[in-house]
Amino acid sequence: MYVGCRRCLTIHALAAELLARLSHNELLLNRANSSSGMAVESPHPNVLTSFTNFLGWTTVDIDEDRYERLLRRAKTEDLTEVSGIGCLYQSGVDRLGRPVVVFIGKWFPFNKINLDKALLYLITLLDPIVKGDYVIAYFHTLTSSSNYPSFSWLREVYNVLPYKYKKNLKAFYVVHPTFWTKMMTWWFTTFMAPAIKQKVHSLPGVEYLYAVMSPDQLEIPAFITEHDMTINGLRYFQPGAPT
Image 1: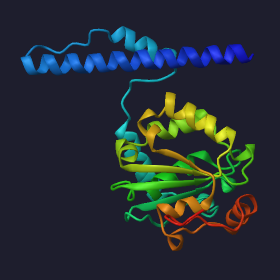
Image 2: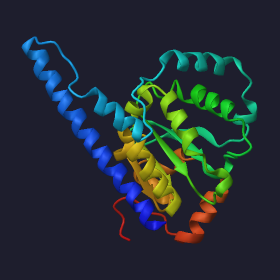
Image 3: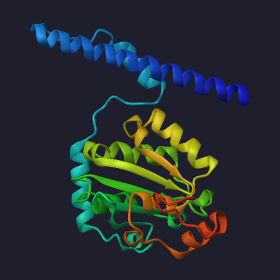
Image 4: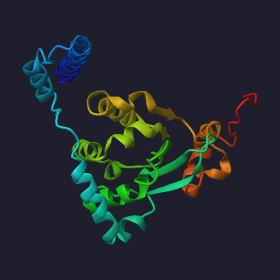
């Protein structure tokens, strides 16, 4: 079983690398053809299509019309059953003045929540924020399997959100990560969301967020700080202070 999984990961990694090289070579060729006035034609569309299909990817552009429809629906639909949970909200700004969006994993009942309304709430909350730079702080503290979203749903959400969400996201902090979050993050950012791979950072404790945002800008549930002190002690990291 382990060998099979390792081979699967190896195949996906090799395919991803080859696809990246093909795309890069095609980009260089297109630039050369454009500068010389020649007609631009993809030299290997079938190869690209085959590999994206093999990996379960799609080359279809994000449907902007669908996003706009969802945004209009989000502004008119009653989303109190999602907003009332309190798992997603803005909490102040970081030290660069960028809005900080907080997601509390333990309060996200993936198996019970209406996922359509969850997506609508995410859109109505983030749409005005993502017009500029922003960061996300995800707290994995004391979560269980019932809080873990499926890959298929994450992929759907990622594909629905337009380019501005990825472009203006400057950092995604995962606080109190586990082996599950590290594996899931690696898989998702490698094969589904490579555009944000370098923006994801795992932090072992809440105090490490203080390097990027002031404590008075961070509003989180008491159980997170209590758990943090249990596993990390009472010491809270201060940038530049001796440890």
